[in-house]
Length: 141
Length: 281
Length: 77
Image (cartoon, rainbow over all chains, first blue to last red; front, side):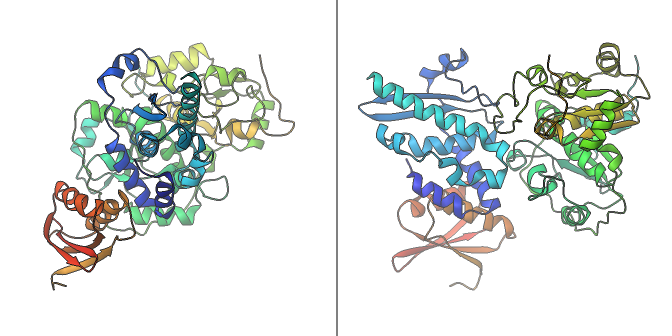
């Protein structure tokens, strides 16, 4: 797990080529979806429908600790890289860390300016889904 | 079976494979996903990014002749080079880049039929090596505004009752959605379509494998079903002008309509324009 | 510093994966056979960077301790 402040600082300091290279790195490092979620994914559960690319997010909250699992096709490296940033920042975090994470996180990362807004917009839906799901599961536990 | 009006503007994946090392051919990849080129592209292909390289970063417009000259020179594309475009999503962005190149006056532009998807499905070779081409001294001698429509042209076109193709999804056309599904921030204040426009979603012209439909199928879609006739003066639009460049390519080159313009202001201009007439079922 | 060293970068103030990204982009701009010297911190960068660079097909020539930092000398392959 990486601290979100560090990730923000890193992306803010990155030039265009470094940004692309960082995203490729994150994209390659997204862990494979554990076997136990595959059936749900194949049945279309947990898809982030706002994304044009098929993005699946699974969230488990146990003892106030959040585990995040994601699945994004390798043919969509940009989306995969963006989702992987969120996983790297929030997988293993506490529920309150996720609740308190900045609402304008995506703006702070500065990716819309570098890549163009239409390439990063799906990410806000993924981010919102993570926040909502954590809130829901916390309330239900 | 009818042939395309200009069959020479399309080349096959095999043709590209055979011309990879041809010095007069420049293969250009243009994608929606900004990283696809980096994770692997056709050998010797250069990347052109519509967002960072073809659009002006301040004004809502494309780069002007000067910036285009610089871009082309740096990419190593000469004035007489034949440029072959390919990209993701059924060549959606490849057509957009081609249209922009045409507006800026580049003459020889072709499309690799099927785009990136077909190349990958055929398990053809991809490389991560960035092509280095010798710099050129590119000069724009004339631009071609005849393939671009501005809002005043569209108003006149509408008033004259000439045909228009709205290539957005049926829900955007009907006004039910103010933006493309999944693209919430590229919306407009009003929903609906330009009065008189017929709805043919852009992807109707593409097969599952990313190639274009046959001439007969295209003629059936645009002519039999939507009433276009050879010789018609046509305007195509979508939301920001990129999906409609795919349809523009189909009408202009595959069906051979001489006068087809892409309205790049599209719905994000028209649907925000004060007093612009709108049709909504 | 060895005479063979062609380029140097300092990534002591960077974190992963920027450390690797900067090194990789630098190596891409160099020609095969040229040598890059990377100044980095111990911990994650020191344990990961030589591995990642080797995976990319380059050769780690030596790792030298330099005060509280380390110099990793890489031949671009």
